Image (cartoon, rainbow, N blue to C red; front, side, top):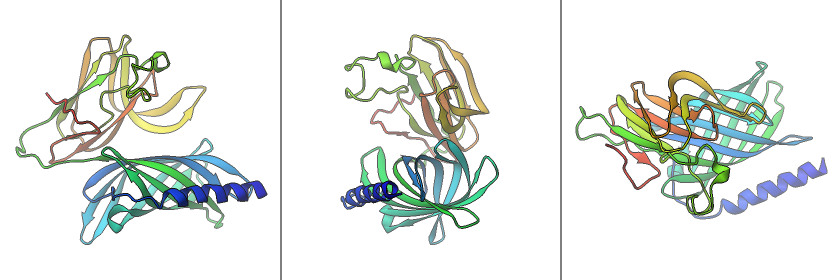
Length: 297
């Protein structure tokens, strides 16, 4: 019990320290976001690992902000909680945010989730928020959650020509199937190996994305939802049946037209460390997120 108490103080101290750093606001209205985080769930007698994965849109509604959840998953020590009744508030121009939701575990047990996020740092592509939360059940038993989260933004811009559709090319990079074999020089910046040339993009409804396989083996892409990674089955995603490429042989390509607005999490069926998120917006042109290079045709 004493270990748990001391560990809790250490974690809170670390987050309190980094939250004092100066940073600019990131969360804003009329945009779509992917929030991914890792941390700990702290109860009276245990500290367990915890992850969170949320895809949502923030829209302006009168004088308030409306949070609309597309997909949501909270995991505590391998047990998944699905998210519903999601709402949120932006505070101090995105310096802070509050979110709340209902959650449900695999056995049907209901919980209430409430969280407060504090912006720590941001760059051109992502923002880092520290996030503290509580998970309470019907008996008011409370589990505290502490996360470090990365927020990726999907920016949509009004098109000059509303009749123009957008095409985007995403390259499946050489070595994606065997990242452990990549040398230091082959990795991006010497530290991070990417699997797709772009992993965060947005596109107008009716636009087409073409995946070009530059790897030396075939790849098979599907859309789905993320879940707790099963090391035995190597299963990080569950297919939702919306899109499926079949085998894309080396040197070949596959194109898909996105007609329905919303989020699409695209993963490789064989190599599930490979995934990209596509946000399809209506009545907007698209912009590739996280890159200075525009790969549209």
